[in-house]
Amino acid sequence: MKYCVIRAKPRVPKIWYCVYPDETRIAVQEEGKRVETILEFFEENPWLSGTKPEKLKIGEDFIALGTFETALNIFNQMCLIRVLKNDGTLAKSLYEHVKSIYRYTEPCGLEVHINTFTDEVPIYENVNKILLKGKSVKLNDLDTFLSQYPNLSTLMIQPSVIGQFSDSSKILEISNIQLSNGGHFGASLLSRFTGRNIACRNLFITEAEINLLIRKWMKSEAYHNLETIHLSVTPDYVLDTDLIIDQLETEEFDPTKRPQWYQIDYK
Image (cartoon, rainbow, N blue to C red):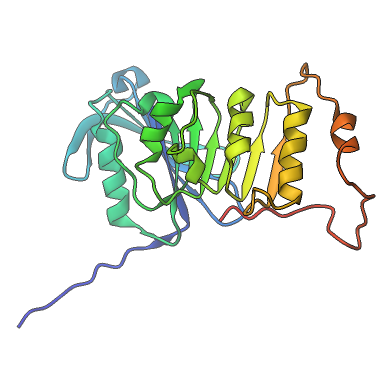
């Protein structure tokens, strides 16, 4: 007779995996609330902390000496761990360990620095949102990275993107996009965007390009899935909004016809 034991895994809200060149974090996010870091690893010499390092084991593959401390910020309590810089096994072992402990209630989020693209980081499963950090990234490198996450629904990019689009660019497959440094890349993306929501800040775009975009959207010549657009330019960039509005069919806002504020759903 065989006996089976089912090990119950506690449910957790949305988990965010945060991967930086010398730092790895685990954070959680309840629906409608901010992301809260609960565990943070620093890859630095633990002997410099003034605390005697202890043996640390994560999963089956990662063993190192590290120091532990508890930190309290404004919102929550978290654990800080310092270990020597390793060959990239920390992020993978930590990811596998968290998966073995918790049962997700919704897809995960990934916050990643572009300088880790060449490191040995794991491919995270069931990811629907990604936040990219850094200064600049080549479109080819971005496409290679995005090809690992085919079910991505939301992409937030802080670095500027360098490169020319092709019809196979992976970024064109994503429904919700936010660009912090749109530049000329953002204008090019707008002309090809087929998703639902897009926000571009620090954009380099002409009045004619904006008029063409809005006109195609209004006449259903393109942007058939589009729900919202948010555009902004740098303070020193001259954009004649009157020139844009004068060439469009407009009417005075009527709150009885539509709400003043639109609630964006990124799911």
